[in-house]
Amino acid sequence: MSLPRPTAILFDWDNTLVDGWAAIAEGLAAAFTAFGLPVWTEEEVKARVRRSLRESFPEIFGPDWERARDIFYAGVRARHLEVLRPMPGAAALVAAAARLVPVAVVSNKQGPLLRAEAVHLGWAEHFRALVGAGDAAADKPDPAPMRMALGPCGVPADGRVWYVGDTALDMQAARRAGFAAVLLGDAAHDGGIAAAAPDAAFPDGHALAAWLIDDHD
Image (tube, rainbow, N blue to C red; front, side, top):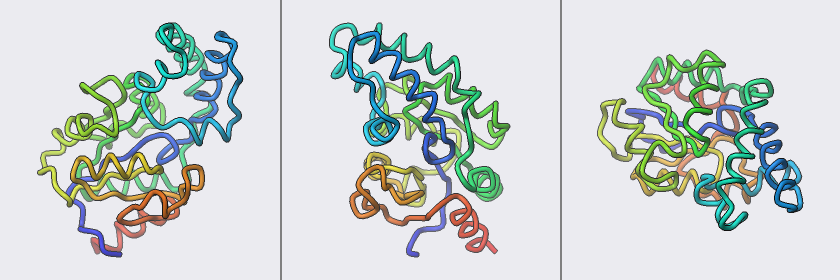
């Protein structure tokens, strides 16, 4: 696999390192119900939730999007730690990556929620930065949060930095920042691997952790 040996690894969060979809779906259902809109199925949530809330909610809810935002976040906060689960191999991946290079997270999940989840899982100590939606001037796929997360890693922003995610938007974000675009999973919820067009793809966290360990032996 023709990937540069990483100088740092930045990770997406939802559906890359953790499965937090149940809380997201509940928050969306509460907001949609309050506005008299059809509630998305779990499959629709996974297929449609890509951009940050401050980009997508004005399109869905119009001028009252901030009220919808507050309803959504109330629903998520009520359950997100209770239903949070690591993705397969994620704990091993985070630990292995952090032993080798600086690691950080860039997510379109709201920053305080992201950081609370990292602490809940006992992973926060591994990350040099945990950057969520609203923390930078713009959200992913804009390069601003990528640069913010890379700063504490202390390495140059170039193609030796990996960004690991599960969607085509993540691969777009990596390229806009000048990083290697690494897909975790098969992107079945987002058109498949070919549509995501990563520089490299790994089936799960176990596989990527094994590659990192083998490559550095």
